[in-house]
Length: 582
Image (cartoon, rainbow, N blue to C red; front, side, top):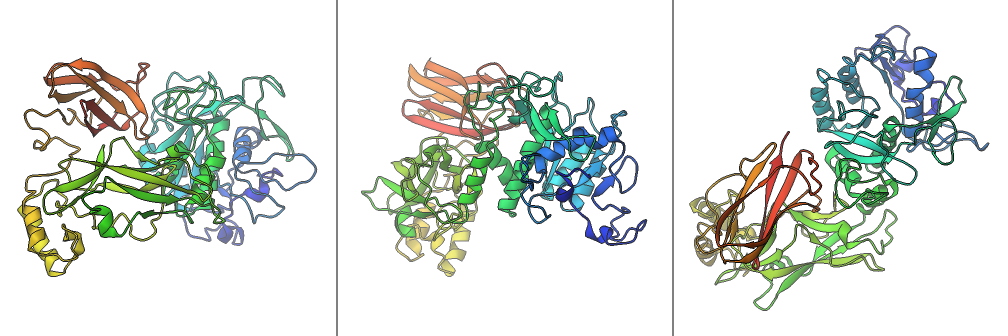
């Protein structure tokens, strides 16, 4: 803790620092916990012995938060260390010791995490692994997640599989790449890998052909040195999370998880598109992550017309448009942001925006897993997302906001959350019935325009007739239930997988209306990337079942999570959600 790179980066409990030695000044149950706590030694000094003090932990801490404040050309710069001779800038390191280097006992790690969460830590970096499950750690991870503390752990070096803590779902598992972005063979592969970061090659000292990671080290208070391993890549991600929280303290853990994965370099080094058990989603890109966060305060989206006209655009309209404007934190237009980074998504795929007139609903539809932007942003930071005219049974709108790199943009004008999408399924129970009619009458008394189905600015009897005319219609379910309107004889359809959730395999049933029709059934991940093609060829008319074994095209087991499966046949397409739960 006396290292010149780290001493100005230490978290300080000022009540204890300015209090009485040997007394629990802040009454948090820990005595003299000025810069952290030693759970193994049960005292306020987490610094014990030169080997523990100056090597692994000091190196990891320097990667995450070493402060750059010298002009002599010495030292290192941590990912989130800041600059300057004072404590004013940069993220702070809370030092928590829970074992001795020679014992490798992990029973106190949950206590250390609880302490970090209770004392306001934004991110916990765990560059270690245990060869057996750690009692209490999953519960500690749940506690951290629910209280806004992000957990990061290394996948370990040369292990036969990924162990705790990295194997726990709410902990981001980090692997390692070299200076050319190639996956390093010592970085343990597995279904839990989320992303990778530079970890350095095997080797000793400085080696131009096999560069390693330079950071603070010891013994001594001024020494720096080289190390390699997933222990080194993990604090890079932890530092990135700290920067994300510094850029926007209101980001939730789910938002940080999302922006980390969506902003990676997906095809870095030898990685191919999509998730892999070696690279995860790709290599950490801190600049892209911060740019995505920087876009949020001043970026927005608007509809192409007034609320009613957008969702009831007239008999001749064949589309409606959402205009998206992307600006950075200085309110400057962001030009050439790729279309693939901007999209609208929904709980169900494909999804439709529908409205009604006197005759029938009119639906405007996304025919893909996401409704992506029509092109990159122009010199004004502007692009559009267009929904095309389409038919369909469902007039519900389970949509989310416009997203950039996985983060929700604020709306200019009417937000998505307004109940003005004119869904006949007022009660949101996935069927239009008498309950919705009763709810309609209550809305009519208040002239709630969410029930103005004919868009004449008056909630009246004509609207009730439209609602009654759609009795029996509903929305896709994420669980087994009554047949959908599409499940009628003579129509192609896709049904909910069974079982769901599943492990290790599930069955997907579908019906083909036309004999010999070319049929494709494929599985996609949450990012919209195709994982596996299950069916691709001509099929006879009738009912079919295909089994998915939870593996990708290369035969590798995919991680737990939400996946989508989609059928495309003779002009018909439909997508549904399934959950792989291990």
